[in-house]
Length: 205
Image 1 (cartoon, rainbow, N blue to C red):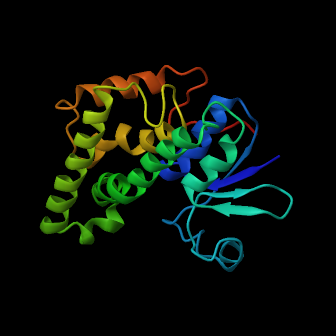
Image 2 (spheres, rainbow, N blue to C red):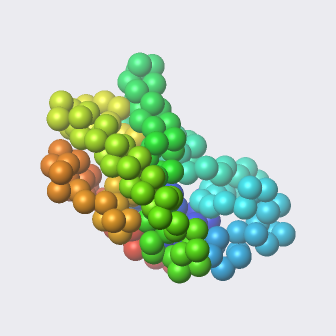
């Protein structure tokens, strides 16, 4: 059985857990956290020198870091990753957007507000910049969702799984989702998918 090393409260770590829930696949969760230093231990750094989670352990010696790479691997051969080259590229496009425009503003601003140890980094300038850039990213999503139900194709894909966690928790970072009704409707569609589990869900055992 595979193991996902991750921090329960992290949106990046929630992504593969959510996909596994939607696929109804068994896995183990091993809690590690950047907050308590467990991702910086010599043992963990031997597994992932970047000292980040999530980390996918396939149980046969193979390890895979980076949340979106994990999503692509786990979704291979499932409806969450298209076979068509263009549709697959569109899916990857939105996953790159999530990491380059969305996560770096929306997730970062949330962490600056939620985690006390990051309060010193929450300067007025940084908070204003992340609010501006995060709102712009939500606007890009809103524009897309006015003409399409999902990202990357006509059905939910790993692009949607990548974008969901930090969009759903955006209000924790001080973002108002009221001006983005299409985004709110999309969040509801993801939450209505069979097998959906919230961020606090962990597998039994």
